[in-house]
Length: 264
Image (tube, rainbow, N blue to C red; front, side):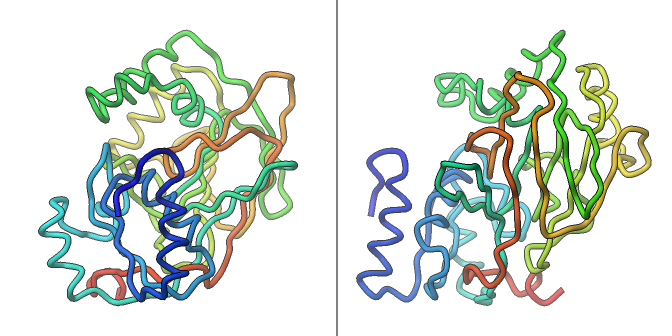
C-alpha cells in the first residue's frame, strides 16, 4: 500500500488493523516507521521494517541488512517481541510516540530548520549541512528534570537505542527490550562545546566528558528558562516545543527483532 503524503503511513497502519492483518511491514526511513508506529500503537499486530529512505536507525540498531532484500530474509527468522516505546506530550497537542529516540535542543533545532530540498537530493549530508549552519549560534538553555533532579542543558537525548543517525553511538547501554530510557544531558550550550562533545562521541569517551550527564529513567520533564523556543524531535522528525514531558509506554507494540538481538 503506497503512501501518498505526510502521515499517510499511520493511516495505512490503522487500515491494516481494521482489516484484520496479522503482520505489517513498513518499507521506508525512520520517519515512515514512526508514522506507522503512531497508527498501530497498543494493537497486537506484528510490525517489521524494511530499510529505505534517508536513514534507518532501526535497521542499524537491531542488525538487519541495510538492503531491503537482505532485511526481508532476516525478518523470516525474526522473533515477534513486545516492547515499550517513548511518548512525547505537550499541553494542547496530541501525544506523539517514538520508537528510537527523542531530542530537545541542538538536534531538534537542526531538524526543525532542515532544508527539505537538500534532504531530498543529498540525504544524510543535509543534516551535516544543518549542523554546521549552527556555527556561531548559542543554544537556548532549558531545564531538564529526571528522577527528581533538575539540570540545565543545551541538548538532551532521550534514547531507546544506542545508534544515533546511523553513524554514531551516544547512548551506550540502552536496548529496545528495556523498559526505560538512557538520557544523555549536555549541560553546555555554545557551539564549540558541541565540537568537543562530537570528538568525545567519536572516541567513545562521552560518559567521561565534563559537562555531560548520563542517567536512566522512564520519564523526563523539560521546561524553558527564557522566551526563546526550544525544539523537540522524535525519531528524526520535528514534533514540537518545550515545555513537554517524555515518558515510557510499556507493552506498546510487537516488533520483529532478529534472534541475535532479541535473545541478548
